[in-house]
Amino acid sequence: MEAYKTLGDRHYLDMAKEMFDFSISGWSDELGGGIYWQEDHKTSKNTCSNGPAAVLAMKLFEETGQDEYMIWAKKILEWTKILWNPESGVYGDHVKIDGSIDRTTYTYNTGTVIHANALLFKATNDSIYLEEARMLAQNSLTHFTTKHPDISIHLLPPTPWFNAILFKGYLALYEVDPDKDRTFIDTMRNNIDYAWAHARDVHGLLSPDWSGKTGMDKKHQWLLDQAPMVEIYALFAKME
Image (cartoon, rainbow, N blue to C red; front, side, top):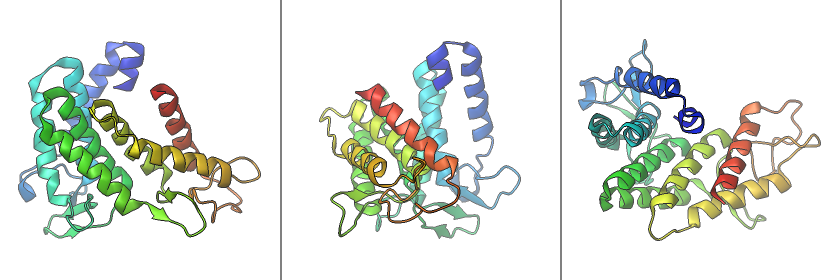
């Protein structure tokens, strides 16, 4: 969708539609709905196969105005609530076909649900979606950030590629929130600025541990730890 918005080439919009159609081809009535995580290994339905599909559905609705995409977004989000954990306040990872739920938490899972709810509020002006996005954003800070004894800020987990997706959820919420609460935006900015100052090795490459406490002496750094920082800083530049 971003390629279409940037370049205006309808080919990319058509590709986005095809990707969405492929995604929902994984929907089934088992467990009451939901999209399988893997096409040929149907053992679980994951937040990461449903949340992003809801985001894409809403982006397609924005571009086409076709109600079917919003209907799908609402349907997907409603089912995905099975994976929300009231104890942590954020989304678990997946539910297995036997009904057991893996409550492991990753920042990107909650990020995509925040993002989809923000887009639904933008399209409908229904406050239920705004409140859901606000609640999840606040819970994500409480659940995921850690205060180190000798560091002045609360740091996110060492999963930069997932944190970037959470940030896109924060940005989508900030864009539509009438209160313009910068709490979540500023938390991410503080994290990446701290990492830039404290978590780079002698070559200037970043550790996934933004505290700088570990990963600085590795012989090789991972591209997936560098690319999210480029994306996050670019998103800040676009925002500001």
